[in-house]
Image (cartoon, rainbow, N blue to C red):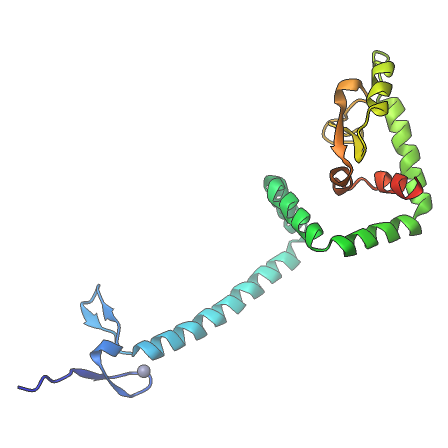
Amino acid sequence: MKATIETQVCTKCRLEKPLSEYQFRKDTQKHRRDCKDCQSKYQKIYQKANLEKERARVIAWQKANPERCKANRKAWKEANLEKVKANRKAYYEANRERERNIQQNWVRANREKCRSYTAKRRAAKSQATPAWANLQKIQEIYLNCPPGHHIDHVFPLNSPIMCGLHVENNLQYLPAKENISKGNRVTLEEQLNG
Ligand SMILES: [Zn+2]
């Protein structure tokens, strides 16, 4: 006896194909009426159309809600600080030369601004130095700074969250590279001038 292969005509491409070319639906216990080729082809078209629709919807919403959009982005950044930092670091590592040039050019083109930053920082430092600060100890810390390191304020002096103090136990040694990657332009300026 010759085994006959059961076939079916696809509702989309109108070709007669064996049943194995049709997806078997567990829910209806029947094969789909359109073949696997057509199914995946139309699925792709549908997904693409919807993706564009979805993208357009998001863009329209962003345009209509710039403030909420900004707040959302900010909230996301705050909730994903580590990720943001890692991304920024990875980007910097991948574009080290370029980033360094940009920073150095910025410093050269903005001497005045840098000077005012330095002045501001100095003022902040003196303002952040309470009467009880151990000036001798602070000086020792500065004098003993290992080569290739900078003095860093654990709690930054100008932090919007919590202003650090210029006191001995708020100081730490940081490898110079790390301190610069904290976005410390003054340090870079000091480096260029020094
Ligand atoms: Zn078909």
